[in-house]
Image (tube, rainbow over all chains, first blue to last red; front, side):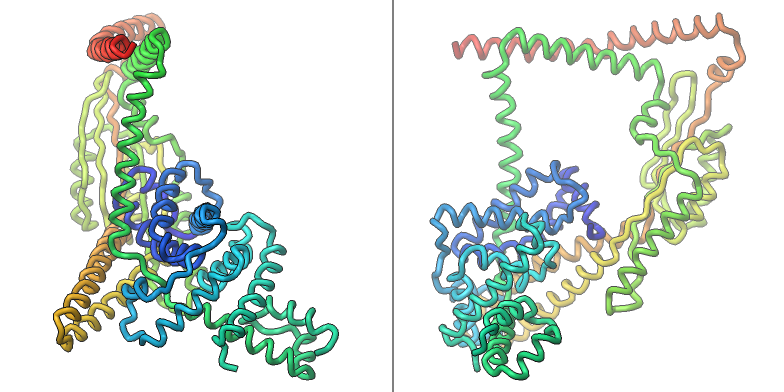
Length: 181
Length: 370
């Protein structure tokens, strides 16, 4: 368990506003990004809200031996699955221009933005299973062990899904002309 | 493409971004297709890793806080509704009666045992030897060392939150008090809370919450242990080094961003541009403020350790109590329980009345509904 998590959790359980804000500050960004990548930008705000309401509601049941980080992502992934189920497994594929406006990196050129949008679209066109492992691994940088806990599967399964997902993603990028070679 | 290329490609997909095992390397030297496949895999992985994170709109965290608050309110509202709808009259009466009994006996018990007991209950009796102190400090700093070994940024000053608790029996409470105040000025600390009260048996109590520089934590605990008989002691050191420097780094990058936006603002010409940059600036400043707040909180907690001291000076009755015989004991305890009973009745009276009023209201609501 990461240092400082204990205080954070205890603070939230004591309804300490400062602790709430700290927990939000730490996880809000990555959870929002994860929701964008798994379900699409349109639902990401709603999902992020749902995730944190669940986190705060379920915090008293949280078992301390698990890491806070993986626990929150597990809730996030499950919430994303619920939303995807509502839309029959089809994520939103709308362009990202508007949502990128709030991006911190003002030097990002229009070209670069549309390229980032294409990459995001390529990611969204994968199966949910493949998308989950790719987002957790390549974007969030989780270890196999963490991923196994978040997705509630064995580490072996994580590895085989990841290998398949990378092959699928390479194929889509190649077809979409996203690769240089 | 060779027959086993498919297998090789599947295997190398797992190694993207890492070093390939020798057997696959050998295959790549001979196989042009797989070499290309490997390059594509690496490149497509880089595409994902270089995706700029999508930032949530600034309104999101406010929205979450607002929903959290309304969730809490809804919870309380539901409880009252549930009471008026679900609880039948006999059940309600039973619950109320049990509440009164529990409150009453709880009160009686506390009255009989005196405030010294209350403190024991409150602090969850964690008995520690003074040795444990040193070990806490040592474990905490070892953890920091391990963290630093993993971290390329060396020379980070460890950030540790120290808290301690001690219950001390003294002969002279006044003397102990003035001693603490003297020592506080030497240590460079202050008392954030001071409370004095007299318990049953004329026991005197003094509770002080001290804030002293963290570097003095051990010294203060050792010094305090010498002031009387230590009945209970515990200490804790929690390492937040990683957390602290992570946050500090993020804060610095936000400040960098703010500076850049200010530069952009200087060059902006159209009103539209100016408004957009200002919106961004406002968002970043909000972030900066909240991060600075958190850092201040961390700094305060790590710079100054928190030590709670509970002094107790046993009263004269308690001393006589020990020396006298069985008869005196019996009379004493009878008188005390009688006193407790009387106190309980006077304590419980407002409760009985207010619970009665609530019950009557529930009955009225139910009658009207029916």
